[in-house]
Amino acid sequence: MPSKRGDAALVALTRTANHSVLWISAAAVLALAGGEHGRRAAVRGLAALGMASAVSNGPLKFVFRHERPTRRPLLISAHSTYSFPSGHSASAFAFATAASAEFPAVAPVLVPLAAAVAYSRVHVGVHRVKDVVAGSAIGIVCAAVAFSVLYERRKESRPPSPADGGQVPA
Image (cartoon, rainbow, N blue to C red; front, side, top):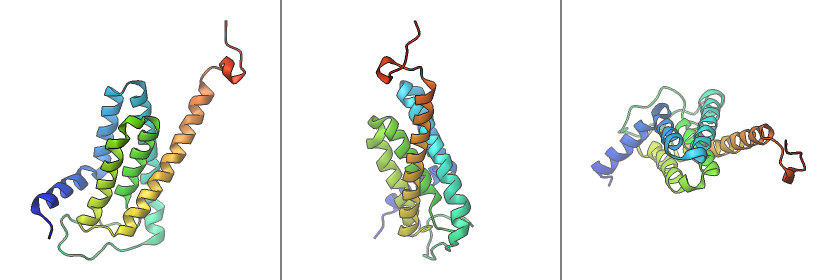
């Protein structure tokens, strides 16, 4: 039997993740308090989140066209979009994975928080487990892409070092 307090906490969590407010706030904290690693983690996390959100909430929902669960009572009102894949889960895991790859010290906070957001979507009744598993996987893939693209850009923009076989300016 679900508890009222547990329901309220998961409703609050899922609502905080609406429009990526939770992840944008986390990026701000990382950028302000995390030094250079925190700023890079925030940028990578937001880049991955943007990619995951665009992919999951755009073409994939309309390709699959899965209706939302019909479980009653819902703890929140369901969006009018399709349920598969979960955009909240994709955004959560994209941000958490990319930011944690850049700044591993934040992983013990961000990864469980992303998992809690994904679980909250099932708990409140607006997604099925397969929706959040697919969304989470999409988020992880988008994080890997964003991380590698931004890593390559950073590598190309720095001056060559003797270790790279390049000349160091005098």
